[in-house]
Image (cartoon, rainbow, N blue to C red; front, side, top):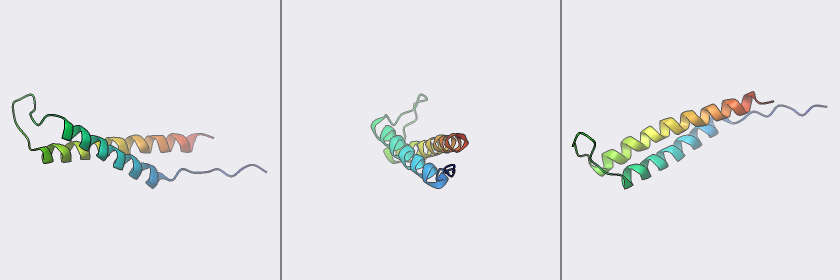
Length: 74
């Protein structure tokens, strides 16, 4: 009898990717500079929040792609 198809847990993949992305983006924002190439200065909180949210979106999307690829694999 063939083994039943196992599906990846999509919400777990996406939320794990988003959490990891937020952590990585926040660390990059915290350790990086607060001045952009146009000479504007940002607070460290703004930099951490912006890069954290950006990292969460990017890593969440990448985790979703990985989950779909694992789902398509047979």
